[in-house]
Image (cartoon, rainbow, N blue to C red):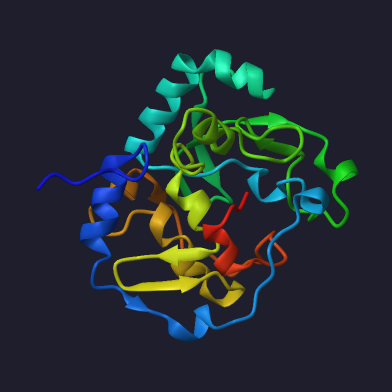
Length: 215
């Protein structure tokens, strides 16, 4: 029986199903009380550096950025010719990621972290919403259809060994999906050294709400 893809990234989905089928579920992590983020306040600041993606996601995003350019313009987002670039994350990892654009986030967001750059993902709209999510709804798909898996999973962290929810003490698990677990599609992102624990920019999340709208 052929599998129906839930997103625009079938190769990524396939790898997740196969590699993470036997992953341990961190039940205590999912029992923590969380609150949904507020776009009015945060303005999508978690998207300040774009997102690291696998090859399948990069290919699809580049293609739809050109095929759906008019739709993005209607949404209010003007995309550059290349929406995928090679990035380096704090000298620890490098690989494909969504490009960024200069945005004065510091003056718009109270408590904007000092170590964040005044940039945002090229797919982020001025109101903080994700234009990929808007495009999904606009074209009759689920809102997360075109949104990179690592974006709509956040703060859920997935690896072949464990499924948990982001916490500053679990950063090694948090980066696992984007730094190449075994021979998965994220293997294109190369580790440079062990990552040090760091705080998540998102102050709080509501896990149950991730499946009833989200950002």
